Length: 404
Length: 142
Ligand SMILES: Cc1ncc(COP(=O)(O)O)c(C=O)c1O
Ligand code: FES
Image (cartoon, rainbow over all chains, first blue to last red; front, side, top):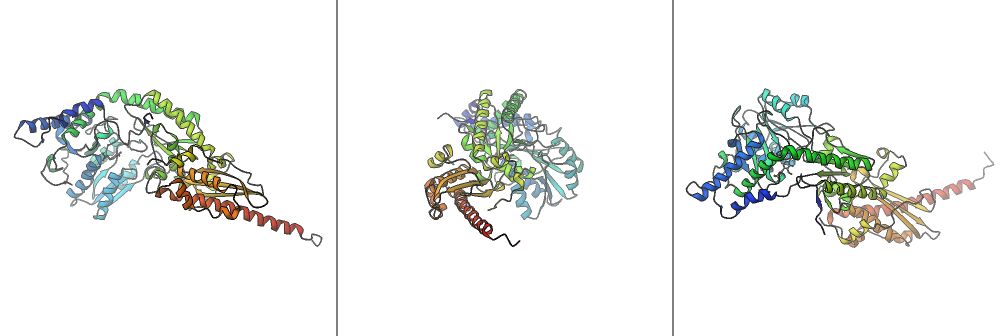
């Protein structure tokens, strides 16, 4: 069987062969511990790690010393949220975040609530963006941290980061952003955007899994962060543990490639995404795009196909790999909380498919995906009682359903 | 999670997709589930004079297991009397399709749909009898 077309790049990306090439020496002979100061093995590992630090810093306009290596964005988010809360708990106990954050932000926030912190979870509009005035109104004298994501993993919506940064700066509040999906995909400048901490991960940008980083601002202001992992005092004491040298080299190489190719890639990918949407929209009725068509990541498209359920759709797309916000695909049997936060009805959340494109997708693949999706949606609508009722002119929202 | 062979078979070649005439007195219609829950099944039966199910049709909004469960249900009830059809249990469907635990509720829905269709047919029939009884009343005294 031929391998399906991979359109789930927001979940993870394949390793770029060029990144693998850079990593290989550090999986073979160059096995040293970057903290070994007494011999060549340690020196060459340290050199590689410092090169990667510059590569990553260069992608976001940071200084190399401001990059802390982690195991991925989940850990970066945990260090940022819990570490800031610990460090500044005498100053205040209030944190602001928003409803469509990744669980790697929401769950640490819930943990802090149990520890006596207060968390404000801002709502988002229909497009997935927060309201700046609402953010302003939520800030208090005891607010110590604002954590708002850069780009959303499910719907692609970008938050007004620069405006948020300026507002936080004005109020003297630390601003963290989970940029896992935006890092390497859209321009980021921590100085111009007033970002104090930023989380990123290698496996979303064609690097290896299990490698990530946290940017922590060193001046104006100097931000300090209590460690989550205590030990040998690596990474300025903020993250102990022997460095994952091949992973870090991979993250550095992936960041350098992303920076180099961003102008052409973001244009190519947004073109493919637009073609995909156009192909679907023009051949199917009652399809809805979720998110903000303007303020969005270049390669994410989230669509609800009314009257058909997401998991059954994916079963029909034998040769395309995507994901769905339907409850039927989740263990919890709850539809996507992100789509719910947007005010998308549960029925349409169950009908949603996320297409996330990437570096290795071609125009021919997108054409094939359009054919498969359109065919499957049509076939399943033929057997959908909802499509039948809608065709009869019945308003589905007014039916007295037998809830179970 | 990979799908079982029988689920895939019913998903790819669903049996008895379609609709029967709701208004036909020999047709019973069951609609169960809700769009907000991600699953809605419509199952219809048509009976002959001996209350034997001569035709069954379904339409389902739901996952592949829900589609397969309803497809299998229509296959099984065809040719059965109403009482025989009522003996079909969701666990029979689970076993036949080898549904994993998270998909058990899809089979429950199929069982509910069979029951709802039969119940609809029965109320329709008793309604007819009432209508017939009303029609039979003398009208001259008005
Ligand atoms: C927005 C966002 N934050 C955090 C994560 C977690 O990243 P990691 O897999 O590197 O821990 C992801 C990945 O799913 C993500 O999309
Ligand atoms: S219909 Fe949702 S799991 Fe089967």
